[in-house]
Length: 285
Image 1 (cartoon, one colour):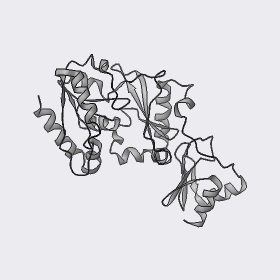
Image 2 (cartoon, rainbow, N blue to C red):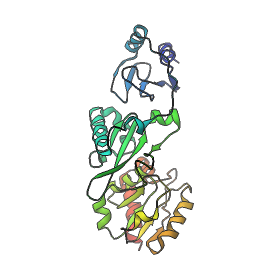
Image 3 (cartoon, rainbow, N blue to C red):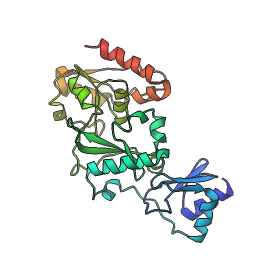
Image 4 (cartoon, rainbow, N blue to C red):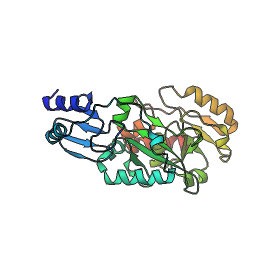
C-alpha cells in the first residue's frame, strides 16, 4: 500500500479494499464508513467532502481524530425524526447535489429511473420510496451502497414492522393496474429493470416474504419470475400455491453469467432484456 494511504489508514482506523480505504468521515458526524480515500483523492459519499489525499493527511495531523470502531449502521433510528415522505425528498436532493453517488445507479443501468422513482442517497444507503396507487409515500426500502456492503456484508434494510409492515413495491402502479397480467420478481432493482422495459412488475419490500393478502386487489394473472440461481424456487412454489389460478412460475432463459433481470440489463443491455421479457409477456397466457 502507498505510504501516504497507509498513514491515513492508521489515523482514521480505515478498512483496506484493494487500492483504496473506507473510513468514518472526519468532516461530519458519521457512524458508517462514508469516506473513500485512494492514493490521490478522497471523497465522502454522505456529506460530499472531497479533495487531495495529501491535504487530508495534513488536516488529520493538525486535527487528530479518535479512532472509531465501526458498528452496525443504525440507519432507521438516525432518521426517526422524519417521516418517509420527508426522508424521500431529503435523500433525493442529496443524490441530486452529489452526482458522484449516482455511480451505483449508472453501473446498474437504472439511473434514468432516479427522478420518476425518487431514488435518493442518505447515510450511505440508496433509498427507494414505496408509493401507493395515489402516489403517496407509504414506506421505504434502503439499499446499501458499496462501502457499507463491503464493511457489513449488508444489502437491503427495511424499517421494523412497527414502523412499516411488509408492502408491495411497484415502480408504476398505473401500468400494473391497467395491465392484463403482471410480473412478480424477487428484488427492488429487478422490478425497476422490468419497468425500464415497460413491463408491469411488483415485488415485496422484504424480498421473498410477501403476505398473500397484499394481492387481494390484483385479480389478474401473475407471472412469478424467480432468479436463475434457484434460491427463489421454494418461495415461488409456495406463492403459486397460495395465489391459485392467478399464478404461474416463469423460468426465464437467463443468459450465461446472469441470475436476475438486472444482470441481463447490466451486462447485455436493454434491448436484450426487452426481447426476453416481451417474448414471455406476449406469448404466455
